[in-house]
Each structure stands twice: as C-alpha cells, then as structure tokens.
Image (tube, rainbow, N blue to C red; front, side, top):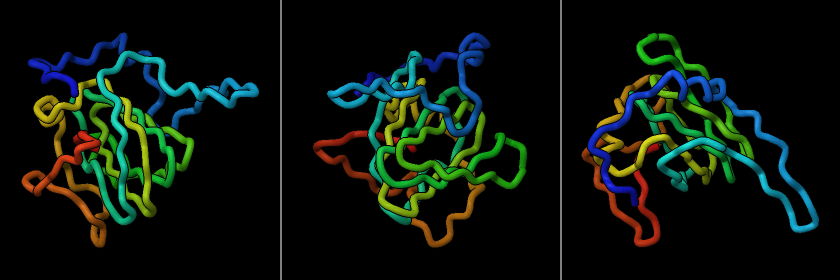
Length: 169
C-alpha cells in the first residue's frame, strides 16, 4: 500500500489538458495476435490502482474529489454511474458503464455508482489510496437515489480481507 502523502498536489492546467472528456472513454484499438490481445487503458501518471468487487444492490461513491481523478474500467458486470458538476444543484445524469467500458471522473464532479449486478472494476487514480490521503480529498454528498440499495457511511464497521486492501469508491 502507498505511504500517506503529507500534501496532495494541486491540479495543474498542464495536467487538465491531458484529460479525456468526462464520461465514457473511447478505448484505443487493442493489439491482437495469435496469443490474444492487449487492451491499452490509461497512459498517464497515477499513484493508485485498485480492484473493486461490488455486490449486486450496492452503492459506492456518492462524493466528489477536490484534486483526485479516476478511471473506472469494468471487468465484469455493470455500473449505473450518476454524475453532475459539484455545486450545480442540477439533477444528476445517469450513464451505464458495461463490461469492457471505462469512465473518467475529473475532480469536482459529484459521482455515485449503483451496481444492479455483481461487478468487478479496476480504478486507476491520480492520488494514493491510503485512508488519510483519500479522506483529505473526498467530500461526501447525497445526490443520487439510494433507497433500497446497500451503502456504507463513515463510521460503519469495515474489515480487511487478508487478500485485499482498498478504500474509497
């Protein structure tokens, strides 16, 4: 796991210029040969890669990041991805992110995820995902429909699986 960062670096204009448009990312064509394929995902400096397993009927996120961005690539299942500009007060937009699709979330975008089916996805992030750094950058918001879905709130009990350690989304 990454060591805690004492200060989260500010986002620069140069960094912003390299981001894809918010939303579903158009993936490059894979390299294919007799051995199989290699699918390019992200060619960018990042500090965290976490594999997240979400159960059907659960919710993640429902927050925004002050400086962090992330790509979420769906390995199996589906994400119902809600988003809107932070502070806009607008109703959130809904996108469906399916297997082999990826969504990009820049800083200052309220976002939430619902999982109608068991889902495994890879999250690639700018900032480290140690608990202290993550909590210093995330602001929780309530903006998407959650009734009838399983969620987690700060203060809820968490345990660490011996095989896995991740936080956040």
